[in-house]
Length: 218
Image (cartoon, rainbow, N blue to C red; front, side, top):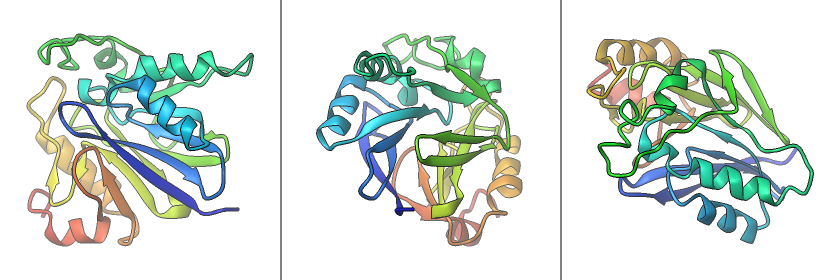
């Protein structure tokens, strides 16, 4: 099977990383965290020959979901009778996604109350087109925050749980600092050290680097 690749668009007022995963030479794409301008995400992927087969949400903060409804609607409008594309999130994030106060969109100037089509739990496997990943629940940044581990490629999309030499803030609703650090140590630092980490903001890193140099987790 062709090698799994990852691309990035930096979107919105918070310069959020919106990722898309695909196989080299393939057409199926999985979008992670459609941060803003969902129609633009759809058009950019379509222009490059991709078809969106699913949408993954690492958590429900406004700067990761502002483009969700627009992307989902734009993609499904073109599927011509095929099964609709679905968005996935951890079950514990349901309330935050649907509440503009909890997801901070109200305070950010553009209310957003949305939903995932499928709510998943820790350890579940998700297969979208020819791409599969495992859900790793990592509460702390939000109660229902999670990461997606694409084991075959050694790729972890970490949302706002783990950054390069930093971690996600925990002062928003449902955040908890001790829980976040525990999630990172117990759920992420057990992955192979050469696992490449793609966070919600900033540049990529590796599990090995963060175990050695992340001041918040050592």
